[in-house]
Every structure is written in structure tokens, then in C-alpha cells.
Image (cartoon, rainbow, N blue to C red; front, side):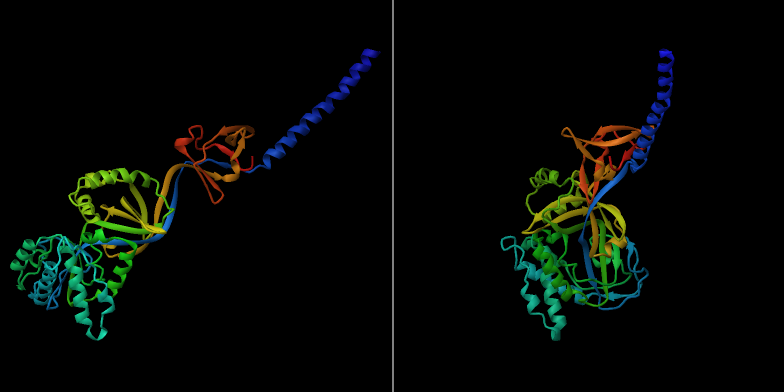
Length: 400
């Protein structure tokens, strides 16, 4: 009888035991289903800095006494010998100004250095606009000859003469290179030039803006040639902005400067635009212009009190759309990598280590140790290279 009673009690407890198990499973399922999850994706991660960029180009501006009708439209790339017009043109005014420019350069030499005469801004007279513009144009244009010797400049003066040109080509008017042609200027061509890179500073850029407003439109019947071999880009950013590979620049650029006879930025830019093999050794940075992505090499960082100038050289994808720009909004990629972006709250600490929690088979939980690259705006980025245990498709608990 006692054995039968024990058997009955045991049988009565089994349903209760199973009910408890079912209850715990249901609670666990409810708890699990209440947790939000996401699927890991290996994506490109980019951090950008928005600023304005200034484009410095290799440009020549010619102007004629006549107004020829051209075979090509503005923004067309032409070779040195491509016919541009079948009309006769004279360049007396251009040559007269060129003589004055070379004579002004003779009064300067390497000992005095380049002198940017900002007094001409205050002396500008609207009632004598053409004369004031001419004074500015001659002063700015003479800067590019400061590195020439007196003998070299004298030889150039002997060779120069006005002429009547038939069958207009870039070669006949004395262009040093082929490129894209335009029929107007913006006033920056003489001051924002490769030859003047040794003057580069925040103050110089402000002065360039002032000169350009007064200098634009000097001379009628303009033909501008823009070289598409290279473009220098200058971006002003806060001193605390650090590009991903900026730290590697110093040692590399110092080695390059050591090769120069004259250690200045103009000579440095000249070498890098001519020696692509050396340029390629410098950090490559991506950026956007007019919603398109481009690449350039970071060549210099010029620090000021609060801001610094990041200077790049662009050698690829240079076309009329780029060369027509002088200033533009840009997003510079300060950091980019491949990896996984998850909510910052998905990351937790345990015993001094950093983890995320993943699900296996849809319900089994597992902690995976991770290395967080950075946290920004509530998002954590885990680079693929630093987190080999992570892979695409893993299910991560958002609120572990």
C-alpha cells in the first residue's frame, strides 16, 4: 500500500515538473524574443570633414586686340597645334604688358625675394580702373620670374615682340603646354599659381581673394589655357583634425625636401608634379567635389594659430569640370576602413574585456570579445582587420 501511495505521489508530481519546465522555456523565449537583434554586414566605413577647398592650377592668360571667332567652345581640350581660329589677330597690348612684367621682375631678384604689394588694393581707383588693374596684373605676373637671373630675363625681353597671328594655335601665341581653353578669367590666375606656393598661408589666401576681385576681367578677348597635368588643392581645417595617414607624412616629405636645391613649397610642388613616382609615395586621401569622389596625395600641412592648411596634389580625373572650379565645398575623408557598424549599446564590458553578444541557432547566446575602433554618434565601428572572430551574417543582440 505504501509503495502504491509513493508511486501515485510521484506520478502526480510529473505533470507539475513538466509545467515548470515549459514555463521556464516560455519565459526564456519571451525574454529572448523581446531582445532586438541585427545582422552584421561588412561595409565601408567613412568619417568626413566638410570644408571649402581652393583649386590652384597651372594657367596662362592671353588677350588680343581683336575679337576672333573660335572653332572650339569654352572648356574644350586642345593640342598645341590645333587650329583655334582662321582670323588674323594681333597681341600688341598683351606684349606691351609682358615687357612691363619682365622689367618689373628685373627690379627684383632672389635676394629681395617675392614681394606681394598689397598696397595696390588700397590704391585701386574705380575711375581709373584699367590703369589700376594693369598695375595689379603686372605686379602679380612678375612674381613668377623672381627665381630667374637678370641675364635670363634680359634674354626673354630681347626675344619678345608683338605680332599679327594668322591661323591661331596655342603654339603660335606662346603657350607652354596644351590644355583646356576658356574665354574668361576669374582674377586668380596670376596669384594662385604653382610658382607662388612658397607664399602659401591663411593670410595669403585672403589676400588672393581681394586681388582676384580687382584683377578679374583685365584685357578683352581673353583666351585662357588650363593645364590638366596636375591641380593643387588647399583646404583649411581645424588644427585638431587629423587625417588617417597624416602622421606618416612628415618623415616622407622631409626626405623629399632634402633633394631640393631650394627648400620651399614652390620647388617641392614642382618636383612632385614632375615626378609622379615620388608623389605616389605620399598618403592618398579621398574627397568629394560636386557629389563625385576623387583622390589626391597629401603633400603638406601648414599649421596656423587655430587652423591648418592641408595641401594636396591631384593627378587623375582632371577634366573641364574640375578645371573650371576655383573654390568648392568638399568632404575630405579623414578616416575610412572596412568593418561592422553596430549600436554602441551592443558593446559591454566584462572582467575588463569588451564583448558583444551573438545568437547561435537563433537562441543560444555567446559572448565574443571585440576591439572597438571608435564610437561616434551612438554607433560603434569594429574594423574587420582587428576583429577576426566576426563575420558577415552573425546575429548580434542590440541590448545584451
